[in-house]
Length: 174
Image (cartoon, rainbow, N blue to C red; front, side, top):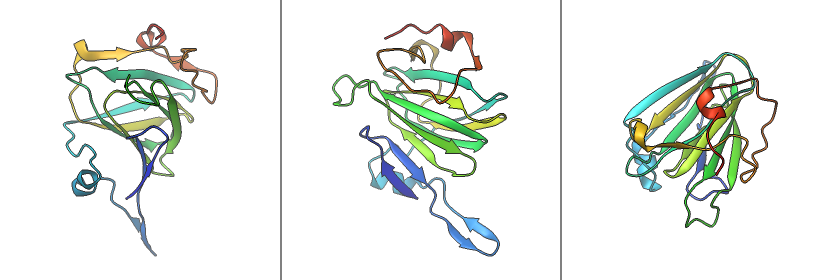
């Protein structure tokens, strides 16, 4: 696996390292040892799938507060998404700054999202599916979020929003 640190310390864009031959390729998408050697979370307790019918769908911005803060490893397994993270660590020099990457079934990249980062995405294609690995189970009372279009954060979404859930539409601004 190829780990590339993003401008937000502790967050990584991870690309499978392909071993190709005439049949196609083989690549690892997870290796506990490689994550542990980099000091990253190497224990995931829950996996989720998000399927989205329409391009332009927005989900986010979500995170879980301590003591149930979660690390996420996110990959798009069908279609493509514009995946966004926001550093919510008050002591971080990149506090409230955001980073985005296109994750797709074609590029097979993953985004490693540390604890105390908000996460959301916009689908770039119809029929997009996202696979999440999480370090903690969902805990409703620790669930937090803010509006996807919060002016204090200023995320540049790639296209108009076509679908958004009531909860995501009604999160407060920071």
